[in-house]
Length: 246
Image 1 (cartoon, rainbow, N blue to C red):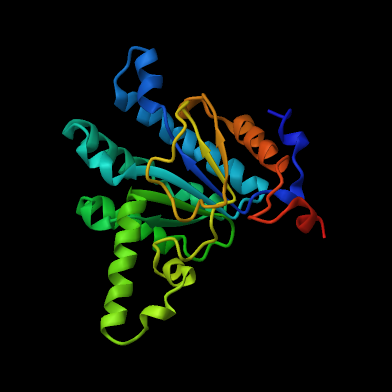
Image 2 (cartoon, one colour):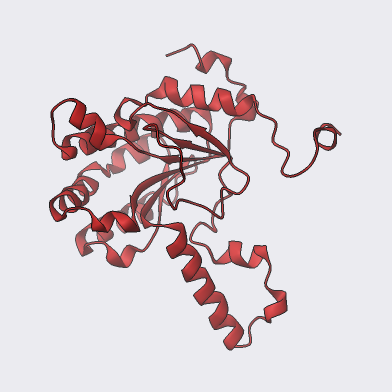
């Protein structure tokens, strides 16, 4: 597990990494198992990757855990995923690694016991000062942007803000992710090349990394490989190379 990790520049670790954890079901199917078996293996990968990201100095790790569209999956799979969430949120791992915990998404859709446990973990880890692990849960960018528009519109109606005062920073402040910077690097596992309604506003200038590895097989070395790829890129944010070098 040292090949890519030894190549990393510790001064250029992305502050915020977002991951679309894809491939659990296909990983299980290849092994003749049910999709729930893949989700269980994927939960174990979350623990490994979170610990490695914290060790590397990543400040925020945001994981696309369950989209608003995922509620349309078969009832038994959704039920199993909710049960897995209850089982896999282990505060011991957060405390051992000084990791705080946050959630972004439409929490009203979650079962009461799942929501209560997650919010309790948010509270219990709030004093931790290391990496922040964020679950995008019952989340989609369309939901998030719709909610932001509603909030801003209400403020206009109440006279708190004028229409011509609305800027991109206004939208930033009303997003569910307003407590953290935009992702520097977005990783998608599983071979698909799309963003799937995930952090669309926030990833306007994120570096994108796609790999064929199914999420349960995505290990620490794969994470370091993605970061190495990120460190080889020039981030210009609309400027020229000459401007960046000044």
